[in-house]
Image (cartoon, rainbow, N blue to C red):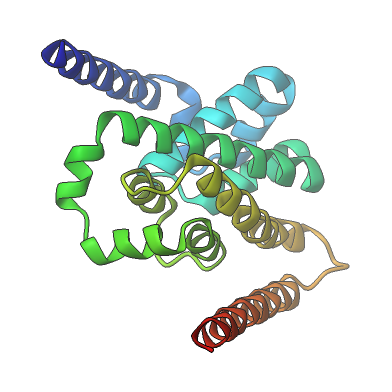
Length: 222
């Protein structure tokens, strides 16, 4: 029974990799992304909205798995295709769905392998702080999104905590990134100023949370 389960995991994993590789190689839309042809890509988006939503979700899953596509490029494409608000919201929602897919896939297929290769200190930090660590790692990305998804999947963090940290952190971080293409096309906004404001607010939140933890420790010791 155990042998059959291992064989099934291997075959399903290989099948998924082959499918993703096929999409990356064959679909013209991915060639457009790699070549930076945003106008052609977004023009295609506008004429096929349902297909565009599905395709952008696939792109986000790939970005959350391997980080071969820059996150700012994915958000910019959604901005051009759907506008600022809907582009931001879809980027945020699809990033949560993509993170869940990668998290579950790694926990099911690659948990033992990643645990052997991963740095123990990074895993302990995620396990000790849970969703809070995921939140800070999303807002202040110390390492690529894909790495965070993979590392979190092999720890004891619950899916609920992972999703909560991802949703809250990505909301702030994606809002900042969405302002970058918006600022380039609007004369009414200074994107650098807004980015600095958002970062300042994030830092303040970080230190407030840190002070709360210190006070909680002091109270417990008393």
